[in-house]
Length: 140
Image (cartoon, rainbow, N blue to C red; front, side, top):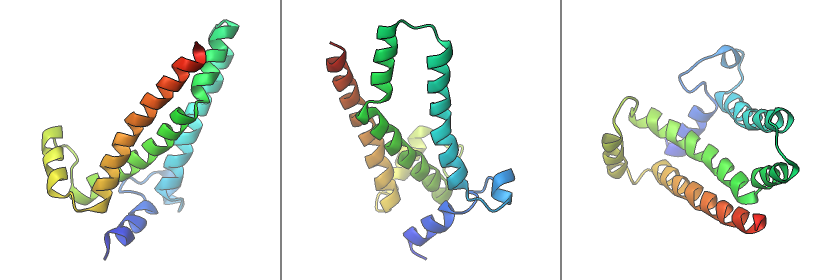
């Protein structure tokens, strides 16, 4: 079985963590994505509604939330989190310290999902930096 077919099979399964929805046949990736998208939207709506802010602060908050780099970093972080969980599942990394995880990452560097994890992990920080840089220039 190839790594990609193993990932595809794992992605549409319950990831070893069954819950009510996965027992109904809904794949874990759908429930994970739904929570990943609805959670921040709920916090955004509650913040605008119940946190007292001046109009300038609301405008700055909206600019930061609608910053394309921040949104892209959030999307790439979903890829990072998903591949991290797959790599943890594939190489049994649960409960290991970070230095052992990094050592195993170096040992398994030929695996494309390890490369995707580290590349997307680095991209998240680059995108957050670019988003912060753009936001600072928009606010000035």
